[in-house]
Length: 296
Image (cartoon, rainbow, N blue to C red):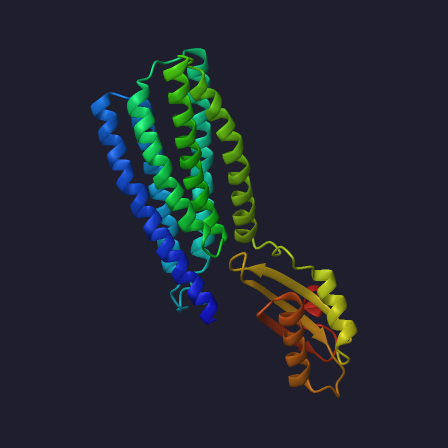
């Protein structure tokens, strides 16, 4: 538990620092873009605003998840991190579509750019984004963190593309470098966004956590605990990807020590399947739920 709290504090600190870094540089980039009349810098400042918002949302969600449970949220606030990851994934999809439209328009109608301000600010932006990305890299790596890191990665790749594009325009005057590189970045971001959305949606829809095999759990409990005659109504879901939960019904003989059987089931679930929170319903005869379902 202490280790989990330490990870949470590390995540919150990293998200806070990354958010401050990105927000501060966003204002610098916007000011230089307006001063130099450089549309590419103004557009990238808008991109960084989106990323700063995503980081702030992830930061808030990580902080909120540290609250204990209450009467309204009996499991606590851990799911807010998953919800933040899902929202950030959706904003990434919006950003990807915007980048595709911009890149295609510039391929059809190339736009001139002043390479020097772009090169200088993009180089500074690369350093800032690299610092932010490293901050997020040294964390727990949960879905919330990875969704925020994907936004920063998009900025990092965008800065690298802007540097290369500015150099190409400066040396050869080829205006297609920027949109061509942007489409490559879109593919990288698209794969990451798909992964975050798939994982967070799976958790929000109460899907079985990755690595939890319900059939294997049934077989293991029945085979390895002598007083368990059968296991059914097994349900698993996750508060987050790292916090799986499970409920099950266990059929045991009438002369079994109920407390010991429940303790053995919970121990095996924790040791073998890394499930720390489980609810076990012990049954000495026909399952009441089955009898109710059959109309008896």
